[in-house]
Picture (cartoon, rainbow, N blue to C red):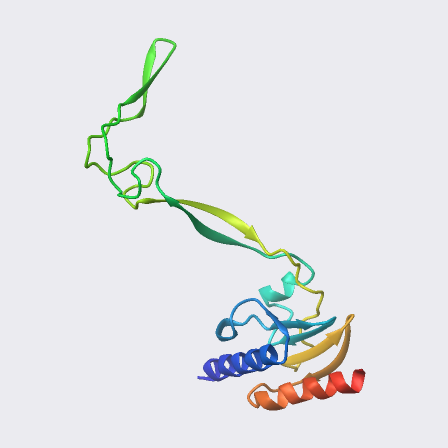
Length: 175
């Protein structure tokens, strides 16, 4: 139950920061990783020194992405062979190797495996690296920093409106 309340509070903070023009990194508000940037100021929410998110500081983040590239060229998006395909046999040193067995019309397409689309899995890299930031200091749940210097921090997230107000006040006092 405590984790649900924490996640709801983080999501509320993320939505409020988005409304105020912050760039929220690491997913939509409901699955926010806890880092937001505006100008050269960074807000860090619920990230301790053991968090995998803390290791992203200053780095580009890569993640697997599966992308489709349209209809399969062999079956024209139907998922089955449109015409008879001949077997491909290669002869090496008097031995024959079957590279692809023949297909009759109506058989499952070997290229797209019956899906009708060709897919490619590859790593996608975020163009902008994440900003440099520190994990939250001990006994705090959020902090605001600029250039490695902590401008404000707090221990609770349940009152998310207070967190956003404190962030705004710290920025106004810093300007």
